Length: 581
Image 1: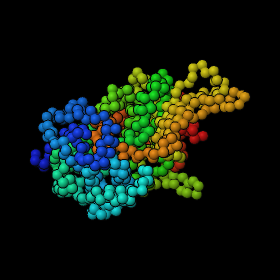
Image 2: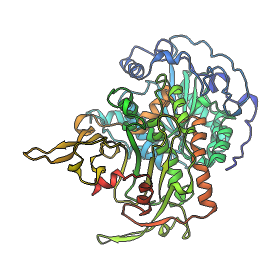
Image 3: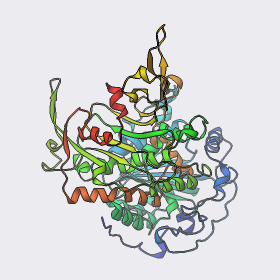
Image 4: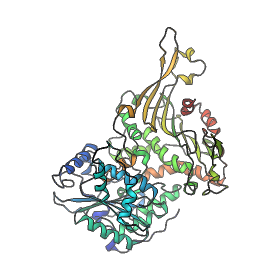
């Protein structure tokens, strides 16, 4: 996917050194001390409770270089930058969030509601504005009307919900323009400056648009709408290319206008509560870390299933398929977090360095390691469900998989020989996303006669249910009360909705707040992306070159039969299927 871009219009219109590759020191003393208002102090407290402030005095790039030098990653030219201007301690700052693609479904259903939730919880600074940008002609009032239909006061359901909603909507504005027009972005810049009222300007652009126009938008924003005295950051939605080549080209194109530290590649699954808790569970509980290796773990399963089909997204989905849409990003990112070594610290670069090591240690996927499927239509309960190729937006002869299962291996000392099984599909019998850790059998088990010939029934299993009904539970063997010796498999269960009264925040809320604060730990670095694509690209090319036909499975079923044979090759039983029985 070669991307054609044109250089910025002139040297006078490119990002200034202070706005492009520099960010003001992150300090309560000189950045967020806007005023003595209570809302300011609450916001500053929330930031410092989430992030160690000392890390922000010496921010590093993705390569570990100080932020006053251009990252040399991926062949970027070495080019020293001017130092940040010294700002008065009491300088007021303004946060401007521009949602590019504001009229799209993602913006309406996720991004604007997430921004409102952050405002509702006093997580945004006192001075902030939100701009929607899209080709659709719309007034400020029409944007507010559109946004208001998706806003909810779900958090704590406070009495001032209506007032907060109205206050939020008055901070929302709209500008219509073409995505490749520097002139239109210059007009946006004028509006932003007018609303910022001369304050220190920090600007965040969220690209909720198709990937083929990422570079055009970044070029125009960098030439005409970047901050002149604060930081500028860009959130980029997946897909990040279709393979190693197109992903690398996209990265190189973006880096003509942005430093690596300004690019926030978002994978919303990394913002989910259970995924973020994965590291806490492992590294802060002595009972788990000693078991986290090939010595005690028999296999690990990453399972994603949806109980609906493409439903209107057939045109988009057919260009990518389930492997690119789910496995190469969501599930692989969770796998890297699960399998990484203990990082030096919770600093973003330390965590991401360990994830990259895992990805680089993984074998490239082969055709024999994978099963692919495609759902077909069926009638059930008096209702007819269309097959994938019966979707009017999908070609009749499409071979795009809507289901895939794969066996992956990490060739390092900790995980040598342990199969990491992935399974993802649409139009299945249930909706779930979970991590299942199956431990080895107990050597010389004294109670093996009580389990019969099937020792898998005695396997301890740790399950992290990401969605729905977030939970962590451990399957153990237990004696059934009574005079006899009858064993039962029971759960030690932490169900979030019964343990915690507070509603779990949406993943987009967490990731947006991290981007605003400059916390990059849950975002994907370019070398991490390269390593991820290198695992899947050879398989994807082989599937498409050889035109491998996917196995058909009925809408609402458990998926292709071949999935069971794949697991059986490694003496594994899918944990979710046993649970459904």
